[in-house]
Image (cartoon, rainbow over all chains, first blue to last red; front, side, top):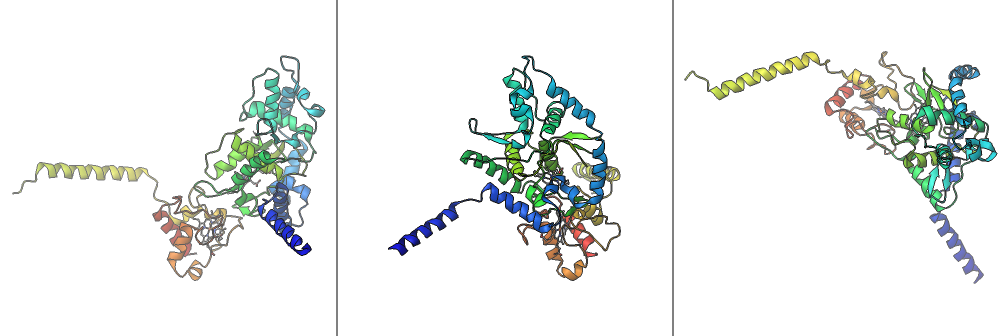
Amino acid sequence: MKKLIWLISCLGCLGAVANVQASPEDDRRSVVQGVQKKFPDIKFEDYVHGALAFSPDAKAQYDAVMTFPPYDAEIEKGAKLWETSFKNGKRYADCFPRSGKNVAGNYPMFDEKTKKVVTFEMALNQCRTANGEAPYKHSDMNTMGLLTAYARTLSDGMRMNIKVEGKDALAAYESGKRFFHQRRGQLNFSCAGCHISNVGNVLRTEYLSMAPGQATHWPAFRGGDYSLFTLQRRYAACNQMVRLVPLEIGGEEYNNLEYYHSYLSNGLPLQASVFRK
Amino acid sequence: MNQISPTLRAAGACVILIAGFLQVARADEPKAPTGQELAFDNRKGNCLACHSMPGDAKAVTSTNIAPPLLDMKGRFPERAKLYAQVWDATKANADTLMPPFGKHRILSDDEINKVVDYIYGL
């Protein structure tokens, strides 16, 4: 009899194992381990440098740019936006714990009430509308872009800490995961094809960065004219590069993508407003 | 007897006119790209994004994603196999990164033939 119970409970276990999907933490670990296996000499912390982690020369150039970032004036503009009071006298700092310090690494978070992913940009807009101001457009780099460029500096060094709890949150995470892994468009590429399967390989002249760390350092100022790119503007750029019509910046598909993509960066330190090629 | 019917004459004039147009159009168009140009162009084959071509000094790339394209005749004695690889690389390897150039109409059949002729010489 004892034996039978033991057998049945074992079968039950097997059933449970077969039913359970890989958890977000399993996903993240296996992606990180993939990078570690291929590049055992690159420290986990250095994943935040992305493609620069593979090229000491490019990293040296980056360090030189970062000693006196030529886009500091832009971040100052963002600081002004952040500090200016709304018409009702309230400020952005009033909408966040710790006056907005060390909060950005908790975003995107899942909101059980609306059953939707809330990005940091959305939280900033919610702060505006709750205080009677019109929301900014997520794709407007001169308002939302500059505001986040400063607001995120308040979370520099915070570890990315995305949570996926409950079945609705998991569904949003899974939808972002599908997006990241699904091949699309004429060229038949997926994000994962470049940033998971070909990490550290060179696409014509560019090292391909690892997915973990990619969500930690936004906005980035890119190119010769230091154009401001929020993370979702970068998604649109990667979509365009492979000849896909980019989706809406701030739309639900990119928000879910950002949720999954940011989870992969969990445990890595944020650094706002970096320079990228 | 000797007379050409008016319709035929009109048709003839038409042919001449169209031929004229074609000639004008040809003169304006840049000449059709070669296999090498198609292979290098990042809006066409963009093969250099993923393949080096050690046999062609003009092929400048730092990529290490895919096997270098060399000794193609030795490795693909059957030209049709090479054509098939470029037409739809997912047939041989479902997980490949290589875009299905023919199947997804990234290159026309004619363009693929030119590219294949070119890499066959590498």
